[in-house]
Image (cartoon, helix red, strand yellow):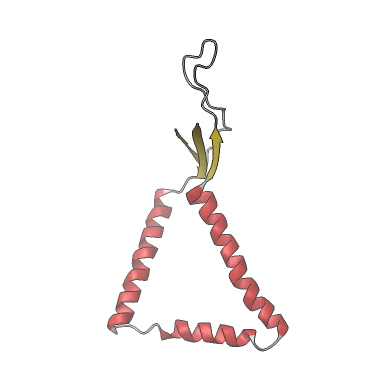
Length: 119
């Protein structure tokens, strides 16, 4: 059996941006713990966001919906760009007749997708 994985391509600039963002998060966290900068306003924002949700039922729905929507968008991005769609195909070896090479079903070629075939 072989697995065909298709995922959208990320440009080199996007990869560099992801690396820079990851390094920046680590640097800001270290600078905060050392005491050079103060990131306490992020905690204040989180407390204010939770307090906003206790004011009424509509506010509570908003406070529940926003992280849910952000989670859906995060999972879609993860699935489309990093995990990809995996299709498992049956290995078609020399079961009968003349078959010089194993074949896999043809996948539609798309310019913005990357295809990986693994056995």
